[in-house]
Image (tube, rainbow over all chains, first blue to last red; front, side, top):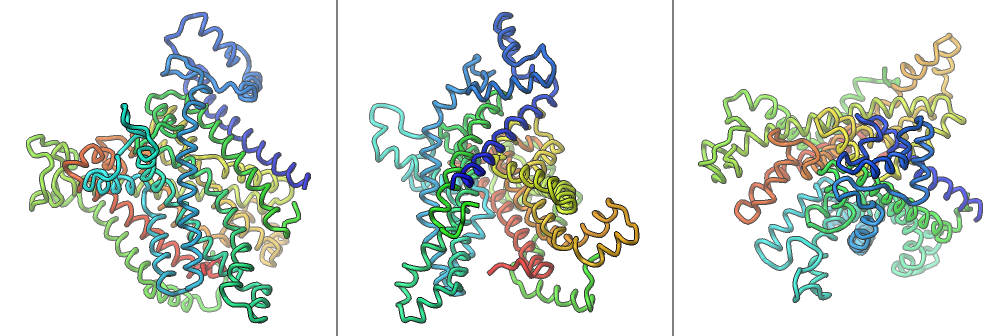
Length: 317
Length: 288
Protein backbone atom coordinates (compact mmCIF):
# COMPACT_ATOMS: atom_id res chain seq x y z
CA UNK A 1 0.00 0.00 0.00
CA UNK A 2 2.67 2.48 1.07
CA UNK A 3 4.71 1.68 -2.03
CA UNK A 4 1.74 2.08 -4.35
CA UNK A 5 0.79 5.42 -2.82
CA UNK A 6 4.40 6.59 -2.97
CA UNK A 7 4.50 5.74 -6.67
CA UNK A 8 1.26 7.59 -7.37
CA UNK A 9 2.47 10.60 -5.37
CA UNK A 10 5.70 10.71 -7.35
CA UNK A 11 3.68 10.56 -10.59
CA UNK A 12 1.53 13.44 -9.33
CA UNK A 13 4.61 15.50 -8.47
CA UNK A 14 5.98 14.75 -11.95
CA UNK A 15 2.84 16.24 -13.52
CA UNK A 16 3.16 19.39 -11.42
CA UNK A 17 6.84 19.68 -12.33
CA UNK A 18 5.89 19.26 -16.01
CA UNK A 19 3.32 22.05 -15.84
CA UNK A 20 5.65 24.46 -14.09
CA UNK A 21 8.52 23.61 -16.44
CA UNK A 22 6.35 23.81 -19.55
CA UNK A 23 5.13 27.26 -18.53
CA UNK A 24 8.73 28.35 -17.90
CA UNK A 25 9.80 27.16 -21.36
CA UNK A 26 6.84 28.93 -22.97
CA UNK A 27 7.59 32.22 -21.23
CA UNK A 28 11.29 31.97 -22.11
CA UNK A 29 10.34 31.41 -25.74
CA UNK A 30 7.98 34.40 -25.74
CA UNK A 31 9.15 37.63 -27.35
CA UNK A 32 10.65 39.56 -24.43
CA UNK A 33 11.08 36.47 -22.25
CA UNK A 34 10.34 36.73 -18.55
CA UNK A 35 9.92 40.49 -18.74
CA UNK A 36 6.46 40.02 -20.32
CA UNK A 37 5.34 39.10 -16.82
CA UNK A 38 6.02 42.65 -15.64
CA UNK A 39 3.67 45.55 -15.98
CA UNK A 40 5.53 48.30 -17.88
CA UNK A 41 3.63 51.00 -15.98
CA UNK A 42 4.84 50.27 -12.45
CA UNK A 43 7.30 52.38 -10.45
CA UNK A 44 11.05 51.78 -10.71
CA UNK A 45 11.34 50.35 -7.18
CA UNK A 46 8.42 48.00 -7.81
CA UNK A 47 9.97 46.91 -11.12
CA UNK A 48 13.29 46.26 -9.41
CA UNK A 49 11.59 44.16 -6.73
CA UNK A 50 9.63 42.11 -9.30
CA UNK A 51 12.73 41.71 -11.45
CA UNK A 52 14.65 40.33 -8.46
CA UNK A 53 11.76 37.97 -7.73
CA UNK A 54 11.89 36.61 -11.28
CA UNK A 55 15.69 36.57 -11.38
CA UNK A 56 15.78 38.77 -14.50
CA UNK A 57 19.42 39.76 -13.99
CA UNK A 58 20.64 36.17 -13.63
CA UNK A 59 21.37 33.31 -16.07
CA UNK A 60 18.57 31.06 -17.33
CA UNK A 61 19.23 28.07 -15.08
CA UNK A 62 19.06 30.27 -11.98
CA UNK A 63 15.85 31.83 -13.28
CA UNK A 64 14.45 28.31 -13.58
CA UNK A 65 15.35 27.46 -9.97
CA UNK A 66 13.80 30.74 -8.87
CA UNK A 67 10.68 29.91 -10.96
CA UNK A 68 10.25 26.50 -9.30
CA UNK A 69 10.93 28.03 -5.89
CA UNK A 70 8.28 30.73 -6.31
CA UNK A 71 5.59 28.17 -7.09
CA UNK A 72 6.74 25.85 -4.29
CA UNK A 73 6.36 28.70 -1.82
CA UNK A 74 2.84 29.26 -3.15
CA UNK A 75 3.74 32.53 -4.90
CA UNK A 76 1.69 32.53 -8.11
CA UNK A 77 2.95 35.91 -9.30
CA UNK A 78 1.24 39.26 -9.81
CA UNK A 79 -1.50 40.14 -12.29
CA UNK A 80 -0.78 42.70 -15.01
CA UNK A 81 -4.27 44.02 -15.67
CA UNK A 82 -5.53 44.14 -12.09
CA UNK A 83 -2.91 46.63 -10.84
CA UNK A 84 -0.42 44.00 -9.69
CA UNK A 85 -2.81 42.11 -7.43
CA UNK A 86 -1.35 38.79 -6.23
CA UNK A 87 -2.70 35.99 -8.44
CA UNK A 88 -2.97 33.65 -5.45
CA UNK A 89 -5.55 35.86 -3.75
CA UNK A 90 -7.60 36.20 -6.96
CA UNK A 91 -7.59 32.43 -7.48
CA UNK A 92 -8.76 31.72 -3.93
CA UNK A 93 -11.55 34.27 -4.39
CA UNK A 94 -12.80 32.50 -7.56
CA UNK A 95 -12.37 28.93 -6.29
CA UNK A 96 -15.75 28.42 -4.55
CA UNK A 97 -17.78 29.26 -7.68
CA UNK A 98 -15.76 26.84 -9.82
CA UNK A 99 -16.02 24.06 -7.23
CA UNK A 100 -19.77 24.59 -6.94
CA UNK A 101 -20.21 24.35 -10.70
CA UNK A 102 -17.73 21.49 -11.25
CA UNK A 103 -19.14 19.31 -8.46
CA UNK A 104 -22.73 19.91 -9.59
CA UNK A 105 -21.78 19.00 -13.16
CA UNK A 106 -20.02 15.84 -11.95
CA UNK A 107 -23.02 14.91 -9.82
CA UNK A 108 -25.36 15.41 -12.77
CA UNK A 109 -23.11 13.34 -15.08
CA UNK A 110 -22.90 10.42 -12.63
CA UNK A 111 -26.59 10.55 -11.66
CA UNK A 112 -27.72 10.31 -15.29
CA UNK A 113 -24.80 8.66 -17.09
CA UNK A 114 -24.32 5.59 -14.88
CA UNK A 115 -28.00 4.49 -14.74
CA UNK A 116 -28.32 5.13 -18.47
CA UNK A 117 -25.27 2.96 -19.17
CA UNK A 118 -26.62 0.19 -16.94
CA UNK A 119 -30.03 0.33 -18.62
CA UNK A 120 -28.39 0.21 -22.05
CA UNK A 121 -26.28 -2.83 -21.12
CA UNK A 122 -29.21 -4.69 -19.53
CA UNK A 123 -31.19 -4.29 -22.73
CA UNK A 124 -28.27 -4.78 -25.09
CA UNK A 125 -29.23 -3.96 -28.71
CA UNK A 126 -32.74 -3.08 -27.53
CA UNK A 127 -34.45 0.27 -27.91
CA UNK A 128 -32.95 1.81 -24.75
CA UNK A 129 -29.47 0.72 -25.83
CA UNK A 130 -29.78 2.23 -29.29
CA UNK A 131 -31.31 5.44 -27.97
CA UNK A 132 -28.53 5.77 -25.38
CA UNK A 133 -25.96 5.22 -28.14
CA UNK A 134 -27.45 7.93 -30.35
CA UNK A 135 -27.78 10.38 -27.44
CA UNK A 136 -24.22 9.88 -26.17
CA UNK A 137 -22.77 10.01 -29.69
CA UNK A 138 -24.61 13.25 -30.41
CA UNK A 139 -23.66 14.83 -27.08
CA UNK A 140 -19.98 14.02 -27.67
CA UNK A 141 -20.13 15.79 -31.05
CA UNK A 142 -21.94 18.88 -29.74
CA UNK A 143 -19.88 21.92 -28.77
CA UNK A 144 -20.98 22.44 -25.17
CA UNK A 145 -21.22 26.22 -25.49
CA UNK A 146 -23.64 25.78 -28.39
CA UNK A 147 -25.79 23.47 -26.29
CA UNK A 148 -25.69 26.25 -23.69
CA UNK A 149 -26.83 28.85 -26.22
CA UNK A 150 -29.73 26.61 -27.30
CA UNK A 151 -30.76 26.09 -23.67
CA UNK A 152 -30.61 29.85 -23.07
CA UNK A 153 -32.81 30.46 -26.13
CA UNK A 154 -35.33 27.89 -24.89
CA UNK A 155 -35.40 28.32 -21.10
CA UNK A 156 -34.37 31.95 -20.67
CA UNK A 157 -35.59 33.71 -23.81
CA UNK A 158 -38.68 31.75 -24.86
CA UNK A 159 -40.03 30.19 -21.67
CA UNK A 160 -38.44 32.62 -19.18
CA UNK A 161 -38.08 29.83 -16.62
CA UNK A 162 -34.39 30.19 -15.85
CA UNK A 163 -31.96 33.13 -15.67
CA UNK A 164 -29.57 33.40 -18.63
CA UNK A 165 -26.43 34.24 -16.65
CA UNK A 166 -24.79 34.91 -13.32
CA UNK A 167 -24.50 32.97 -10.09
CA UNK A 168 -27.34 34.76 -8.23
CA UNK A 169 -29.74 37.64 -8.71
CA UNK A 170 -28.10 40.88 -7.69
CA UNK A 171 -30.08 43.07 -5.29
CA UNK A 172 -32.06 42.71 -2.12
CA UNK A 173 -34.49 40.04 -3.31
CA UNK A 174 -31.95 37.66 -4.86
CA UNK A 175 -29.51 35.19 -3.40
CA UNK A 176 -31.89 32.69 -1.75
CA UNK A 177 -31.42 28.95 -2.20
CA UNK A 178 -34.08 28.67 -4.94
CA UNK A 179 -32.53 31.62 -6.77
CA UNK A 180 -29.04 30.09 -6.60
CA UNK A 181 -30.30 26.70 -7.80
CA UNK A 182 -32.08 28.32 -10.74
CA UNK A 183 -28.80 29.97 -11.76
CA UNK A 184 -26.88 26.71 -11.35
CA UNK A 185 -29.07 24.35 -13.42
CA UNK A 186 -28.11 25.31 -16.98
CA UNK A 187 -24.33 25.76 -16.51
CA UNK A 188 -24.06 22.48 -14.57
CA UNK A 189 -26.04 20.53 -17.17
CA UNK A 190 -24.00 22.00 -20.05
CA UNK A 191 -20.65 21.37 -18.34
CA UNK A 192 -21.66 17.83 -17.40
CA UNK A 193 -22.94 16.59 -20.77
CA UNK A 194 -19.76 15.25 -22.37
CA UNK A 195 -18.75 13.49 -19.14
CA UNK A 196 -22.29 12.10 -18.97
CA UNK A 197 -21.96 10.71 -22.49
CA UNK A 198 -18.60 9.08 -21.74
CA UNK A 199 -19.83 7.63 -18.46
CA UNK A 200 -22.80 6.11 -20.29
CA UNK A 201 -20.51 4.42 -22.81
CA UNK A 202 -18.00 3.13 -20.26
CA UNK A 203 -20.62 1.95 -17.78
CA UNK A 204 -22.29 0.04 -20.58
CA UNK A 205 -19.14 -1.71 -21.78
CA UNK A 206 -17.90 -2.34 -18.21
CA UNK A 207 -21.26 -3.91 -17.36
CA UNK A 208 -21.20 -6.14 -20.45
CA UNK A 209 -17.60 -7.11 -19.67
CA UNK A 210 -18.50 -8.05 -16.09
CA UNK A 211 -21.49 -10.10 -17.27
CA UNK A 212 -19.05 -12.36 -19.13
CA UNK A 213 -17.05 -13.17 -15.97
CA UNK A 214 -17.09 -16.65 -14.48
CA UNK A 215 -18.36 -15.57 -11.08
CA UNK A 216 -21.44 -14.02 -12.69
CA UNK A 217 -22.11 -17.18 -14.66
CA UNK A 218 -21.74 -19.16 -11.42
CA UNK A 219 -24.14 -16.90 -9.57
CA UNK A 220 -26.72 -17.21 -12.32
CA UNK A 221 -26.34 -20.96 -12.72
CA UNK A 222 -26.92 -21.53 -9.01
CA UNK A 223 -30.33 -20.03 -9.57
CA UNK A 224 -30.05 -16.45 -8.31
CA UNK A 225 -32.64 -14.10 -9.77
CA UNK A 226 -31.36 -11.67 -12.38
CA UNK A 227 -31.99 -8.64 -10.18
CA UNK A 228 -30.03 -10.13 -7.30
CA UNK A 229 -27.08 -11.03 -9.54
CA UNK A 230 -27.04 -7.54 -11.02
CA UNK A 231 -27.15 -5.87 -7.62
CA UNK A 232 -24.78 -8.11 -5.69
CA UNK A 233 -22.25 -9.21 -8.31
CA UNK A 234 -22.28 -7.02 -11.37
CA UNK A 235 -22.89 -3.47 -10.20
CA UNK A 236 -19.95 -3.18 -7.81
CA UNK A 237 -17.47 -4.66 -10.24
CA UNK A 238 -18.76 -2.75 -13.23
CA UNK A 239 -18.35 0.53 -11.37
CA UNK A 240 -14.58 0.09 -10.92
CA UNK A 241 -13.56 1.17 -14.44
CA UNK A 242 -16.17 3.91 -14.20
CA UNK A 243 -14.23 5.46 -11.32
CA UNK A 244 -11.14 5.50 -13.53
CA UNK A 245 -13.00 7.14 -16.37
CA UNK A 246 -14.19 9.76 -13.96
CA UNK A 247 -10.56 10.49 -13.05
CA UNK A 248 -9.68 10.93 -16.71
CA UNK A 249 -12.67 13.21 -17.20
CA UNK A 250 -11.66 15.55 -14.37
CA UNK A 251 -9.19 17.75 -16.28
CA UNK A 252 -11.82 18.25 -18.95
CA UNK A 253 -14.53 18.94 -16.42
CA UNK A 254 -12.36 21.67 -14.93
CA UNK A 255 -10.80 22.79 -18.23
CA UNK A 256 -14.11 22.88 -20.07
CA UNK A 257 -15.41 25.22 -17.44
CA UNK A 258 -13.53 28.06 -19.15
CA UNK A 259 -16.01 28.14 -22.03
CA UNK A 260 -19.10 27.36 -19.96
CA UNK A 261 -18.30 29.85 -17.20
CA UNK A 262 -17.76 32.58 -19.78
CA UNK A 263 -21.02 31.79 -21.59
CA UNK A 264 -23.04 31.97 -18.37
CA UNK A 265 -21.00 34.82 -16.76
CA UNK A 266 -20.15 32.42 -13.93
CA UNK A 267 -17.53 34.10 -11.69
CA UNK A 268 -15.12 31.15 -11.45
CA UNK A 269 -11.52 30.27 -12.35
CA UNK A 270 -12.32 29.47 -15.99
CA UNK A 271 -13.89 32.85 -16.59
CA UNK A 272 -10.91 34.47 -14.83
CA UNK A 273 -8.49 32.67 -17.18
CA UNK A 274 -10.44 33.60 -20.32
CA UNK A 275 -10.72 37.18 -19.15
CA UNK A 276 -6.97 37.19 -18.51
CA UNK A 277 -6.22 35.77 -21.97
CA UNK A 278 -8.39 38.46 -23.60
CA UNK A 279 -6.46 41.12 -21.65
CA UNK A 280 -3.15 39.42 -22.49
CA UNK A 281 -2.54 39.11 -18.74
CA UNK A 282 -0.08 36.22 -19.02
CA UNK A 283 0.98 35.96 -15.34
CA UNK A 284 -2.66 35.67 -14.30
CA UNK A 285 -3.38 32.75 -16.69
CA UNK A 286 -0.08 31.17 -15.64
CA UNK A 287 -1.10 31.25 -11.99
CA UNK A 288 -4.59 29.92 -12.72
CA UNK A 289 -3.14 27.11 -14.89
CA UNK A 290 -0.69 25.98 -12.21
CA UNK A 291 -3.41 26.12 -9.58
CA UNK A 292 -5.94 24.19 -11.69
CA UNK A 293 -3.27 21.58 -12.45
CA UNK A 294 -2.67 21.20 -8.72
CA UNK A 295 -6.42 20.64 -8.24
CA UNK A 296 -6.53 18.00 -10.96
CA UNK A 297 -3.42 16.24 -9.68
CA UNK A 298 -4.73 16.09 -6.11
CA UNK A 299 -8.13 14.75 -7.17
CA UNK A 300 -6.47 12.13 -9.36
CA UNK A 301 -4.33 11.12 -6.40
CA UNK A 302 -7.44 10.69 -4.26
CA UNK A 303 -9.01 8.52 -6.97
CA UNK A 304 -5.82 6.45 -7.28
CA UNK A 305 -5.80 5.93 -3.52
CA UNK A 306 -9.41 4.71 -3.43
CA UNK A 307 -8.99 2.44 -6.47
CA UNK A 308 -7.34 -0.50 -4.61
CA UNK A 309 -9.94 -0.18 -1.85
CA UNK A 310 -12.63 -0.81 -4.47
CA UNK A 311 -10.83 -3.59 -6.29
CA UNK A 312 -8.87 -6.04 -4.13
CA UNK A 313 -7.33 -7.52 -7.29
CA UNK A 314 -5.16 -4.42 -7.62
CA UNK A 315 -2.21 -5.28 -5.43
CA UNK A 316 -1.10 -1.72 -5.09
CA UNK A 317 1.32 -2.28 -7.91
CA UNK B 1 3.63 -0.61 -47.48
CA UNK B 2 0.80 -2.28 -45.60
CA UNK B 3 0.50 -5.51 -43.66
CA UNK B 4 0.62 -8.48 -46.00
CA UNK B 5 -2.83 -9.74 -46.92
CA UNK B 6 -3.66 -12.92 -48.80
CA UNK B 7 -6.12 -11.30 -51.20
CA UNK B 8 -5.71 -7.51 -51.35
CA UNK B 9 -8.67 -7.15 -53.72
CA UNK B 10 -10.96 -9.11 -51.42
CA UNK B 11 -9.98 -6.98 -48.50
CA UNK B 12 -10.79 -3.76 -50.33
CA UNK B 13 -14.14 -5.11 -51.45
CA UNK B 14 -15.02 -6.24 -47.93
CA UNK B 15 -14.06 -2.79 -46.63
CA UNK B 16 -16.28 -1.03 -49.14
CA UNK B 17 -19.14 -3.38 -48.33
CA UNK B 18 -18.81 -2.55 -44.62
CA UNK B 19 -18.71 1.13 -45.48
CA UNK B 20 -21.92 1.02 -47.49
CA UNK B 21 -23.62 -1.21 -44.91
CA UNK B 22 -22.82 1.24 -42.12
CA UNK B 23 -25.57 3.75 -42.78
CA UNK B 24 -24.33 6.62 -40.59
CA UNK B 25 -20.78 6.32 -41.94
CA UNK B 26 -22.09 6.36 -45.50
CA UNK B 27 -24.26 9.43 -44.88
CA UNK B 28 -21.38 11.03 -42.96
CA UNK B 29 -19.00 10.53 -45.85
CA UNK B 30 -21.50 12.02 -48.29
CA UNK B 31 -22.02 15.01 -45.99
CA UNK B 32 -18.28 15.62 -45.56
CA UNK B 33 -17.71 15.45 -49.31
CA UNK B 34 -20.61 17.84 -49.89
CA UNK B 35 -19.27 20.32 -47.33
CA UNK B 36 -15.69 20.12 -48.63
CA UNK B 37 -16.84 20.68 -52.23
CA UNK B 38 -19.17 23.50 -51.14
CA UNK B 39 -16.51 25.41 -49.19
CA UNK B 40 -14.00 25.05 -52.02
CA UNK B 41 -16.30 25.71 -54.99
CA UNK B 42 -18.94 27.93 -53.38
CA UNK B 43 -16.97 31.19 -53.39
CA UNK B 44 -16.45 30.88 -57.17
CA UNK B 45 -20.14 30.56 -57.99
CA UNK B 46 -20.98 34.22 -57.56
CA UNK B 47 -22.37 34.05 -54.04
CA UNK B 48 -22.33 37.21 -51.96
CA UNK B 49 -19.02 38.27 -50.46
CA UNK B 50 -19.02 36.82 -46.91
CA UNK B 51 -17.42 40.02 -45.56
CA UNK B 52 -19.60 42.58 -47.39
CA UNK B 53 -21.35 44.69 -44.78
CA UNK B 54 -24.78 46.12 -45.58
CA UNK B 55 -26.14 48.02 -42.60
CA UNK B 56 -29.47 48.79 -44.30
CA UNK B 57 -30.19 45.08 -44.56
CA UNK B 58 -29.41 43.56 -41.15
CA UNK B 59 -31.18 40.47 -39.75
CA UNK B 60 -32.92 39.89 -43.09
CA UNK B 61 -34.99 36.70 -43.24
CA UNK B 62 -34.06 33.98 -45.75
CA UNK B 63 -34.77 35.03 -49.36
CA UNK B 64 -33.75 34.09 -52.88
CA UNK B 65 -30.93 36.62 -52.66
CA UNK B 66 -29.74 35.59 -49.17
CA UNK B 67 -30.56 31.89 -48.78
CA UNK B 68 -30.20 31.90 -45.00
CA UNK B 69 -30.76 35.60 -44.47
CA UNK B 70 -28.24 38.12 -43.17
CA UNK B 71 -26.51 38.69 -39.83
CA UNK B 72 -26.18 41.70 -37.53
CA UNK B 73 -23.96 43.47 -40.09
CA UNK B 74 -26.12 42.57 -43.07
CA UNK B 75 -23.60 39.96 -44.26
CA UNK B 76 -24.86 36.88 -46.12
CA UNK B 77 -25.11 34.05 -43.58
CA UNK B 78 -24.81 31.25 -46.15
CA UNK B 79 -21.64 32.72 -47.63
CA UNK B 80 -20.20 33.13 -44.12
CA UNK B 81 -21.04 29.52 -43.25
CA UNK B 82 -19.03 28.40 -46.29
CA UNK B 83 -16.13 30.72 -45.51
CA UNK B 84 -16.17 29.67 -41.85
CA UNK B 85 -16.36 26.00 -42.78
CA UNK B 86 -13.26 26.31 -44.90
CA UNK B 87 -11.30 27.78 -41.96
CA UNK B 88 -12.68 25.34 -39.37
CA UNK B 89 -12.05 22.26 -41.52
CA UNK B 90 -8.59 23.46 -42.56
CA UNK B 91 -7.56 24.06 -38.93
CA UNK B 92 -8.98 20.68 -37.93
CA UNK B 93 -7.23 18.68 -40.65
CA UNK B 94 -3.91 20.57 -40.46
CA UNK B 95 -3.75 20.20 -36.71
CA UNK B 96 -4.65 16.50 -36.85
CA UNK B 97 -1.91 15.99 -39.45
CA UNK B 98 0.72 17.58 -37.20
CA UNK B 99 -0.60 15.61 -34.23
CA UNK B 100 -0.01 12.41 -36.19
CA UNK B 101 3.53 13.48 -37.16
CA UNK B 102 4.51 14.27 -33.57
CA UNK B 103 2.74 11.21 -32.18
CA UNK B 104 4.39 8.90 -34.72
CA UNK B 105 7.84 10.19 -33.87
CA UNK B 106 7.31 9.90 -30.11
CA UNK B 107 5.53 6.53 -30.31
CA UNK B 108 8.03 4.87 -32.66
CA UNK B 109 11.05 6.03 -30.68
CA UNK B 110 9.53 4.90 -27.36
CA UNK B 111 8.40 1.54 -28.73
CA UNK B 112 11.55 0.79 -30.72
CA UNK B 113 14.14 1.61 -28.05
CA UNK B 114 12.14 0.35 -25.07
CA UNK B 115 13.77 0.30 -21.64
CA UNK B 116 14.62 3.60 -19.99
CA UNK B 117 13.90 5.71 -23.09
CA UNK B 118 10.43 4.19 -23.28
CA UNK B 119 9.86 4.65 -19.54
CA UNK B 120 10.89 8.31 -19.65
CA UNK B 121 8.85 9.11 -22.75
CA UNK B 122 5.72 7.34 -21.53
CA UNK B 123 5.87 8.97 -18.07
CA UNK B 124 6.07 12.35 -19.82
CA UNK B 125 3.15 11.39 -22.05
CA UNK B 126 1.05 10.39 -19.02
CA UNK B 127 2.02 13.66 -17.37
CA UNK B 128 0.91 15.71 -20.37
CA UNK B 129 -2.39 13.85 -20.40
CA UNK B 130 -3.15 14.99 -16.86
CA UNK B 131 -2.63 18.69 -17.64
CA UNK B 132 -5.82 20.68 -18.25
CA UNK B 133 -4.75 21.53 -21.78
CA UNK B 134 -7.35 24.21 -22.43
CA UNK B 135 -5.50 26.48 -20.00
CA UNK B 136 -2.19 25.82 -21.79
CA UNK B 137 -3.93 26.93 -25.00
CA UNK B 138 -4.99 30.13 -23.25
CA UNK B 139 -1.36 30.83 -22.25
CA UNK B 140 -0.12 30.24 -25.81
CA UNK B 141 -2.80 32.49 -27.29
CA UNK B 142 -2.14 35.26 -24.78
CA UNK B 143 1.57 35.26 -25.70
CA UNK B 144 1.57 34.66 -29.45
CA UNK B 145 -1.95 35.72 -30.42
CA UNK B 146 -4.30 33.45 -32.29
CA UNK B 147 -3.37 33.44 -35.96
CA UNK B 148 -4.46 30.23 -37.74
CA UNK B 149 -0.81 29.02 -37.74
CA UNK B 150 -0.43 29.45 -33.98
CA UNK B 151 -3.80 27.75 -33.43
CA UNK B 152 -2.90 24.74 -35.59
CA UNK B 153 0.43 24.24 -33.80
CA UNK B 154 -1.01 24.85 -30.33
CA UNK B 155 -3.90 22.44 -30.86
CA UNK B 156 -1.50 19.75 -32.10
CA UNK B 157 0.79 20.34 -29.12
CA UNK B 158 -2.03 19.58 -26.70
CA UNK B 159 -3.38 16.48 -28.47
CA UNK B 160 -0.52 14.15 -29.49
CA UNK B 161 -0.46 12.02 -26.33
CA UNK B 162 -3.23 9.52 -26.99
CA UNK B 163 -2.10 8.84 -30.55
CA UNK B 164 1.52 8.40 -29.43
CA UNK B 165 0.41 5.67 -27.03
CA UNK B 166 -1.39 3.84 -29.85
CA UNK B 167 1.67 4.00 -32.14
CA UNK B 168 3.93 2.74 -29.35
CA UNK B 169 1.64 -0.22 -28.65
CA UNK B 170 1.65 -1.18 -32.35
CA UNK B 171 5.44 -0.92 -32.61
CA UNK B 172 5.84 -3.11 -29.51
CA UNK B 173 3.55 -5.66 -31.10
CA UNK B 174 5.52 -5.88 -34.34
CA UNK B 175 9.15 -5.30 -33.40
CA UNK B 176 9.85 -8.95 -32.49
CA UNK B 177 8.45 -10.31 -35.75
CA UNK B 178 10.52 -12.02 -38.41
CA UNK B 179 10.36 -9.30 -41.05
CA UNK B 180 11.93 -6.82 -38.63
CA UNK B 181 14.66 -9.25 -37.64
CA UNK B 182 15.27 -10.09 -41.28
CA UNK B 183 15.57 -6.41 -42.14
CA UNK B 184 17.95 -5.88 -39.26
CA UNK B 185 20.03 -8.91 -40.29
CA UNK B 186 20.18 -7.47 -43.80
CA UNK B 187 21.85 -4.41 -42.33
CA UNK B 188 18.96 -1.94 -42.49
CA UNK B 189 19.73 1.15 -40.38
CA UNK B 190 17.82 2.07 -37.24
CA UNK B 191 16.01 5.09 -38.63
CA UNK B 192 14.95 3.17 -41.72
CA UNK B 193 13.84 0.25 -39.58
CA UNK B 194 11.72 2.53 -37.40
CA UNK B 195 10.09 4.64 -40.06
CA UNK B 196 10.07 2.42 -43.16
CA UNK B 197 9.36 -0.96 -41.56
CA UNK B 198 7.68 -0.47 -38.18
CA UNK B 199 5.68 2.76 -38.56
CA UNK B 200 3.67 1.50 -41.57
CA UNK B 201 2.43 -1.36 -39.40
CA UNK B 202 0.75 1.23 -37.20
CA UNK B 203 -0.91 2.89 -40.21
CA UNK B 204 -4.40 1.38 -39.71
CA UNK B 205 -4.58 2.56 -36.09
CA UNK B 206 -3.12 5.91 -37.10
CA UNK B 207 -5.73 6.49 -39.78
CA UNK B 208 -8.52 5.71 -37.32
CA UNK B 209 -7.04 7.96 -34.64
CA UNK B 210 -6.57 10.81 -37.12
CA UNK B 211 -10.15 10.80 -38.32
CA UNK B 212 -11.33 10.97 -34.71
CA UNK B 213 -8.77 13.73 -33.92
CA UNK B 214 -10.12 16.07 -36.59
CA UNK B 215 -13.53 16.20 -34.93
CA UNK B 216 -12.07 16.74 -31.46
CA UNK B 217 -9.79 19.51 -32.68
CA UNK B 218 -12.69 21.24 -34.44
CA UNK B 219 -14.64 21.28 -31.17
CA UNK B 220 -11.75 22.90 -29.27
CA UNK B 221 -11.14 25.41 -32.08
CA UNK B 222 -14.84 26.31 -32.05
CA UNK B 223 -14.65 26.88 -28.28
CA UNK B 224 -11.59 29.12 -28.54
CA UNK B 225 -13.05 31.08 -31.47
CA UNK B 226 -16.31 31.46 -29.59
CA UNK B 227 -14.39 33.02 -26.68
CA UNK B 228 -12.65 35.47 -29.04
CA UNK B 229 -9.36 33.63 -28.53
CA UNK B 230 -9.29 31.62 -31.77
CA UNK B 231 -10.08 32.64 -35.35
CA UNK B 232 -10.81 36.36 -35.11
CA UNK B 233 -13.39 38.35 -37.10
CA UNK B 234 -13.70 39.50 -39.84
CA UNK B 235 -12.35 36.05 -40.84
CA UNK B 236 -15.35 33.78 -40.30
CA UNK B 237 -15.25 30.48 -38.43
CA UNK B 238 -18.19 28.43 -37.20
CA UNK B 239 -17.09 29.14 -33.63
CA UNK B 240 -16.83 32.93 -33.91
CA UNK B 241 -20.14 33.20 -35.79
CA UNK B 242 -21.70 31.91 -32.58
CA UNK B 243 -20.02 34.63 -30.49
CA UNK B 244 -21.85 37.36 -32.34
CA UNK B 245 -25.13 35.46 -32.41
CA UNK B 246 -25.06 35.28 -28.62
CA UNK B 247 -25.87 38.97 -28.34
CA UNK B 248 -28.91 38.73 -30.61
CA UNK B 249 -30.64 35.67 -29.12
CA UNK B 250 -33.68 37.79 -28.35
CA UNK B 251 -34.07 39.16 -31.91
CA UNK B 252 -32.54 36.51 -34.19
CA UNK B 253 -32.09 33.14 -32.47
CA UNK B 254 -31.76 31.42 -35.87
CA UNK B 255 -28.26 32.98 -36.24
CA UNK B 256 -27.24 30.82 -33.28
CA UNK B 257 -28.60 27.67 -34.89
CA UNK B 258 -26.83 27.39 -38.28
CA UNK B 259 -23.14 27.40 -37.24
CA UNK B 260 -23.81 25.02 -34.36
CA UNK B 261 -25.62 22.57 -36.64
CA UNK B 262 -22.68 22.72 -39.06
CA UNK B 263 -20.17 21.90 -36.28
CA UNK B 264 -22.38 19.13 -34.88
CA UNK B 265 -22.90 17.47 -38.29
CA UNK B 266 -19.24 17.75 -39.26
CA UNK B 267 -18.04 16.19 -35.99
CA UNK B 268 -20.74 13.50 -36.09
CA UNK B 269 -19.74 12.64 -39.65
CA UNK B 270 -16.03 12.52 -38.81
CA UNK B 271 -16.69 10.28 -35.80
CA UNK B 272 -18.87 7.93 -37.87
CA UNK B 273 -16.15 7.70 -40.52
CA UNK B 274 -13.59 7.00 -37.77
CA UNK B 275 -15.78 4.23 -36.34
CA UNK B 276 -16.27 2.47 -39.66
CA UNK B 277 -12.57 2.83 -40.50
CA UNK B 278 -11.82 1.11 -37.19
CA UNK B 279 -14.18 -1.74 -38.08
CA UNK B 280 -12.50 -2.14 -41.46
CA UNK B 281 -8.82 -1.56 -40.67
CA UNK B 282 -8.50 -2.54 -37.06
CA UNK B 283 -11.07 -5.17 -36.11
CA UNK B 284 -9.23 -6.02 -32.86
CA UNK B 285 -10.23 -2.69 -31.35
CA UNK B 286 -13.88 -2.98 -32.35
CA UNK B 287 -16.47 -1.64 -29.95
CA UNK B 288 -19.02 -3.87 -28.24
